[in-house]
Image (cartoon, rainbow, N blue to C red; front, top):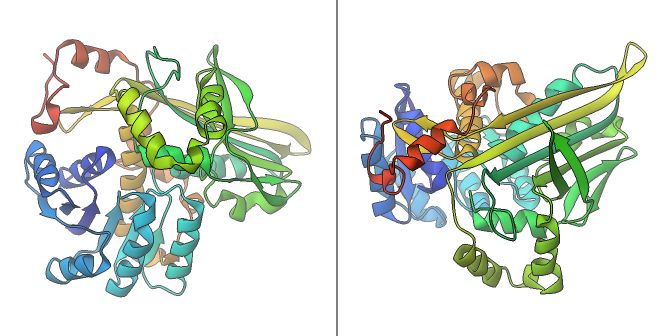
Amino acid sequence: MHRVLILGAGKIGALISGLLAESGSYKVQLGDMDGAAAEAVARAHGGLELSAFALDASQPELLERHLASHPVDAVVSGLPYYCNRGVAEVARRARIHYFDLTEDVEVTRAVRATASGASQAFVPQCGLAPGFISIAAAELITHFDELRSVKLRVGALPQHPNNVLKYSLTWSTEGLINEYGNPCQAVSDGRLLELAPLEGLEEIEIDGMRYEAFNTSGGLGSLADSHGAGCETMNYKTIRYPGHCEQMRLLMNDLKLNQDRGTLKRILENAVPQTLQDVVIVYAAVTGKQDGQLREENYVNKIYPQLICGRLWSAIQVSTAAGITAVVDLVLAAPARYHGFIAQEQFRLTEIVANRFGRYYAPGGSKQVSGEVVVAGKTGHQRHRKVALR
């Protein structure tokens, strides 16, 4: 039984803890500043191998005290990105494996520095983007003799958009603003550059449906460090319904709310609803030479909400939690293989999708499940109980 501490009982942490605890291979501790929130998650999952704790992990001394009295093999941070430097430093001193979901470039650089020379694994940027998209793109890259371009495109979208933003809040609002407001890494002519967010607007068509895509921060992860030198262009963009980028430019640039992110967070959370009826689109396109011929290969997938552990989870929850739990599972199953800083692209796509947690990325889903559960009225209070379809 692997012992793991999950930090954060929010949208993603709740599913991560449930997946691991109900697998039969993990003893899971779930820590949150709000002890009642952690307790609610533990009750909803039955509490068999899941223990809840009131824990303010943003205070390193409190986290160290907890680990001293409740030792674990690994810590998984589902906290806001700005908390992760301290968590990584505590993990280094405690000699335990470290995983996080951060999209923040500077935090990842700090984690890389902390991981230098460590005997345990430090695996930041797990989840969807960065995370799974880098793994998918890296797999395609191995098929080419020479690289020309690598395009990474990911979007978490409402199935039924009906507001001017054509968007619903499906994950961390702070993380969303961070992606929309910070510089974006890209490769051009083999050189790593920083581009402005909300720029580079393009149209993209997938399965006959038109979307827009534009620069956002963090989604490229460490892929540029691993494969950018031999590539003409490499970039990451977020997929949205047409018109979204223009509205966000108004809010963040014209109204200067990128300089007042607290106000922007309050506006979005007051006006934009959450939803469990979403869809995640994952699109990677790699162009280059194979046997002397110019070719392109694509990985395209749509993930829909799923019933897991007796509860309906949104597509962004499923795709993010499946990505990080698959990586945790692979590392803890063979810890001798992993030490120091571990980039997402070091994992093979075949390993991830064959994993018991990575299988949730299997194609072929639909919006039918979420529609049936919502119509049956079983989602409103499901945090406190399991649901079942008749």
